[in-house]
Image 1 (tube, rainbow, N blue to C red):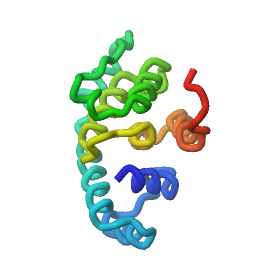
Image 2: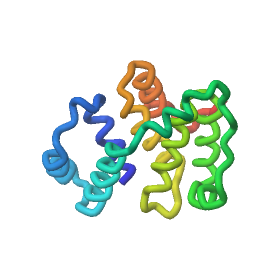
Image 3: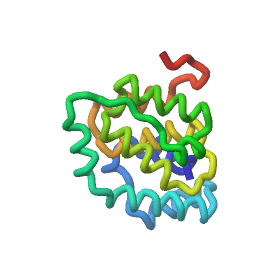
Image 4: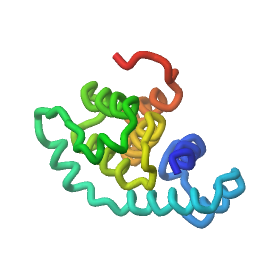
Length: 153
C-alpha cells in the first residue's frame, strides 16, 4: 500500500490533479500494482479524505509543541529506524502537533504489521500533500528525493 501512495504522489503532485477513484484504480493496475494493494490504498485514501480535521487543528492551536512518546502498541509496529524518523519529524518542527498525530493515526490504520522508515516518509508525504501549500510541497520534495542514508540532524 505504501508503494501505491508514493506512486500517487510522484504522478499527481497536487490533489487537484488526481482523477476519480475508478480512473485511478485503472491507472494503478496498468502501472503494475495488484488489486489487493490498490484496494487497500484506495480505501485508506477514502478514509483519509473523510477524516475530521477539527481535532487535529485544535492540537495545532496550542503554542507549545509537546514531545510525543509512542504508546507501546505504536512502538511495537514501528521499526527502530521508523521510530527514529518519526521522532526526528516531531522534534524538528517539520510537522505541527496535529500533523504529527495524524501521521501516527494513519500509520496505525495500515494493515502492515511492521512499519519501516519508508512507510513513515510516505504517510508523512500524504499528510503534507493533503494540505497543498507551498511550504508543505517543499518539505515533501525533500522527504521524497533526499538521500536516505543521510543523517537526520
